[in-house]
Length: 131
View: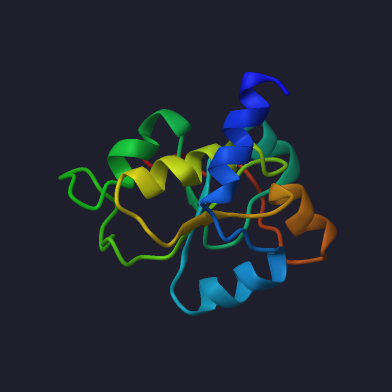
């Protein structure tokens, strides 16, 4: 097993990963879906309606509940669901969010592509990322 495979397995061991249908229900209950996919992917494939688009480079500052740069309203109790293309980078990012104090951070199994394949709503892509 490669180092990244080990790191991914370790990250996922700390998460309660969710499927697209569960993400819809959690979002309706106030969970924040954070899309970390590159702009080109979002433009080409679309976005999850109501998601917050955020470049990975800003994620740590925006998801730290103690940071002055955190997302508005974000607390240590906020449910955050991180989404990438297929559910790999998002697992690593969600584990990092746990380290920042977001105990309810997780990611979407299969990523955006699983969301889309499930037939769930998709908005046109290209939203600007939250700085």
